[in-house]
Image (cartoon, rainbow, N blue to C red; front, side):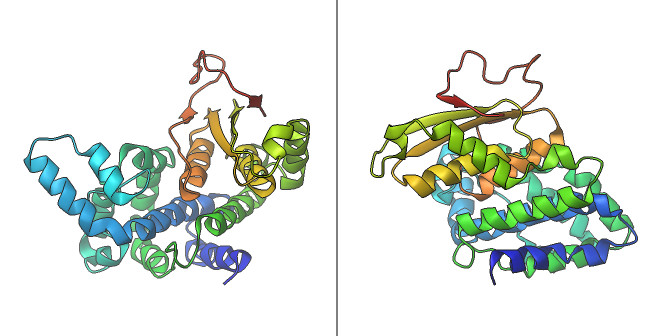
Length: 284
C-alpha cells in the first residue's frame, strides 16, 4: 500500500466519528491514535527485553532510563506490559488500560499525548461508545517498520496533517504551509552552502524554527539535505506555542526517528526555550 493509500485508509476512521465529532475535530483522534499505533509497532520487537530490563533495574534500585533506551534501540520506550492487541482482550477496562499503557511511555513520548489532550478524547470516545471500535481499527493497521519505514511513515503522517488542516478551516493557517512554498524557502536557505550540498561531505548543520507549528519547515529541510547529501546531518531545533501544533511537530519528528529533545513548547519571545544557543540557520 503506497503512502497516500495508507493515509486514506487511516483517515477512514473518520467514518466511525461522524455524528459524534465535527469534521474539524477528526484529527484530534486520528493523529494521536496514529502516533500510538506507530510507537506500539516500533517497540514490539524489543518489548520483552525492555520489560525484563525494567524489572531488573527497578529491583536493583537503579534508575532505568538510559538502560531502557538502549534496550529499545529508540529515543523512547514503554514499561507497560500492555499493547494495542492485548488491550482489545479486556473491553470492559479498555479506557483504564489505555491510560495505563500511555503512562508507561518515556517522558518525551508521553508528553506528545498529553499535549494532544488525548485522555480527554479517550473519555469522549468512551462516552460515545466508540472507544473499542476506534482502538480495534488502529490495532489492525500494520505500521511495523518492516512494512512502513521511517521515511514512508513520515509521508503518511504529513498527509494526515494536511487532511486535518484542510477540514479545519478556522485553523488551517496554523497547521499547514504548502510544501512547494517550504521547498522554495529551504532551497534558498542552503543554495550558497557548497559544503553541505557536496555529496559525501559529512558535515553537520543546525537549523532553528522559532515558530515551528507542526514542524513542516524543519521536516522539509531535513528531507532536502538527505536528498542532496546523505552524508550530511541536520540537527533541528524548534519551539511552538500552541499545544496541539507542538504535539504534531514532536510526533512527526519521533515518527521519523529523529531526536525530539530539541523541540520545546512555549512562547519564543517571553520564554525562549533555546536561550544562548547559536544555530547555523533559522527558518520561520
